[in-house]
Image (cartoon, rainbow, N blue to C red; front, side, top):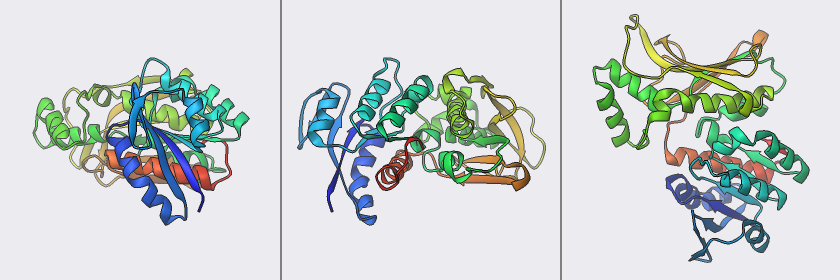
Length: 312
């Protein structure tokens, strides 16, 4: 087997899990996947040694990297977008769990991928271990998807269930943080912002909406209102093909027997309304760094095994 070099950006929990798993998972599919360099905020590790951060295109050329994997926090300085575009121009596929640049540079990234004949794979940004993006982009290709609805933030589902069990909001959030489900700052999860972001990306995969031009309307979790018997309160994101450019996130009472109401803990689900083909639902995939890392590994395998370009 010829080695397939990978440059990884990100040294946090997701990046570390990816680096630990990718070689072994590649071997299962007959591939010699190797992380040859890891880039942090201002330093990088290559050949087992840490040194100054170098120019990314030069690093990609020197290592012959075929994949540039991003597991860095969303940023506001444009670095994620800049490096993804540099990687595509250098002939590497991009696998990313980072959301910020997908929201702001979607069209530019898609154009660069098409020019380079490479793919941008975003499973880690749309649902981690739950393959919602795969359904949106390829599995449901040819289906007449009219609407999507889902619970895509594990922290929100966990917190709402703890509120239903009698906990107060602060206690529910603290428990989610102790369990490794919620981040240190859960504001984006509780506000509906994270769910809206994921649905902006899923809508782009399904219907070609530009995420930068898609408006999000959200309802925050502030407590637990009255809920009918046999129902569970859920943070539900929705988008419809006949209302382009709008994503809504609202707190909705869902029957406990339904796909959304039946979720427990940090599990997620997305329901696709496919018109005359009926509804297709994908669920599961707990929120965890390892789950996001496995989604990135799945995307890495797809990038090197499938002859596809553009967003996947």
